[in-house]
Length: 243
Length: 102
Image 1 (cartoon, chains in turn cyan, orange):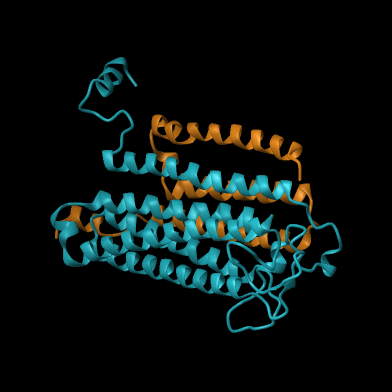
Image 2: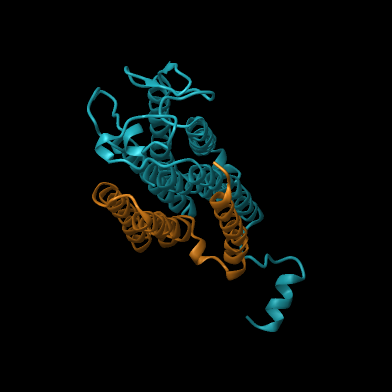
């Protein structure tokens, strides 16, 4: 970059970052939001590191509030397959749904770059379907987590407890369920917000206001948010379900 | 419809191919993570592999899907740079958790 253009880009009138204001602000919002999620996940890592780990054989694992549970044993159910042990399968399906809806979102943004309103409508609809499917899966996952197993777990205070609440849970230490609710809940809330934003884009594209007001860059900004939601899930999947 | 409009209304096949390639890569990495979850014994190696693969996925989502790799350096660093604070937080809390009374 020559000295003249460098000077010009900092003297006003030209953006030194080369993107529109709305997109820049979306990026900085994402940076802030990334800190919030990182704080959740780091706090989770801290509490988990402090809590006693299960040391026995994995085959003999049973739930207890004395040690941190093994994720494969907690998240091992799939809808319509009651009693079948399918560790991490359902959460894997959820991961694929979210990645796929991220892909359709890239196609929607690509269509927006060409001012192709029909393309935006088609791909936003698919993105919306993916988002709603993910939320549906999460609703099932939460219900299953809250209701718990038939046998329940005998806690160290002597009560037999089924499922989970913010106060007690049958899977492990009190903080385990609390972190599950807060981390996946906060992420789910972001997905919900993303679905609303996607719906607004689809609505504006369908009614023609998107084209009339020339708001094609807005599709890209919503796209950035949606990819960020996918990105957060990638981290939640690793740190909450895999490790 | 003139020539210019026509070219605007067909997807850029090079871009589409790149998107599909990244999507397949994300899927494959997730499948590899699945395999590792069931093959390897719990331990440090397993966790390191999971974290590395997560960052591979993050790199492609942020770089290609969010298009950050193709932005100006200034924007790239103003987004990636602040993440250095997270490294500090993680190092501090990992130290703290090792000395925290259980």
